[in-house]
Length: 235
Image (cartoon, rainbow, N blue to C red; front, side):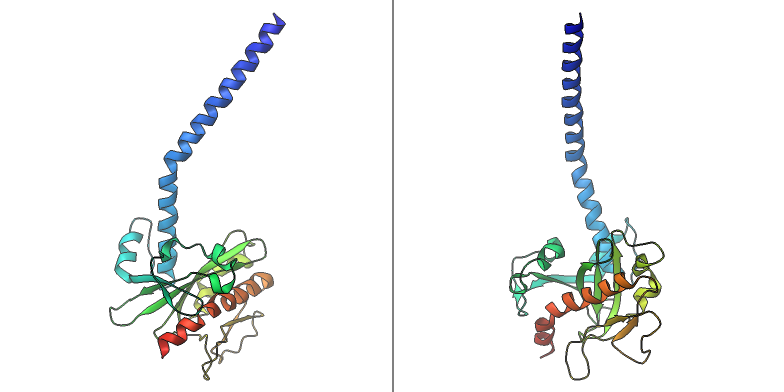
């Protein structure tokens, strides 16, 4: 009887494991298109946010199609690469490659149908994990029109403040090239020490020094990759 019970338990457990695995597999396959769709919508919302356009999950698609006029990919030497979808590029993977092998996506927006804004994705490392976002530039390809930053696990009230409007608005109208045309990015300095007259400095987050340094390095690393393209367009 004991032998029979053990066999029964073993068979029952095995069947249950197989059934549960099958159910989870079917659920994952079924939900995958919805998850992918949600990721796409969230990405479009973030791109729009860099243009200071608020959108919802319901109208993000419509707003994106209205304000984002084109997207394309350029190489590290500033040449447009045909046949590559900018929206599908993973910046984390691209930044892991040597600069000469990177595919660099660019989105072009227009708020008023007259002027253009160039939107650049950025990706870096904070205190506890990755940070990322988008920086939009005015037509001069130097002046920042807007920014949108996000994070995976920065400390609430400290590093997580990179997601707040007050921090992101600091970058508006700052410039990534100096008067001599040299790329200098925008430096994120110790909170309360930024030169208010400077076009190239913003205050970091008090108590969030490492995350602030991460944003500073992220902007320098990512935006500098586009320098040849910016200069090609300015010619």
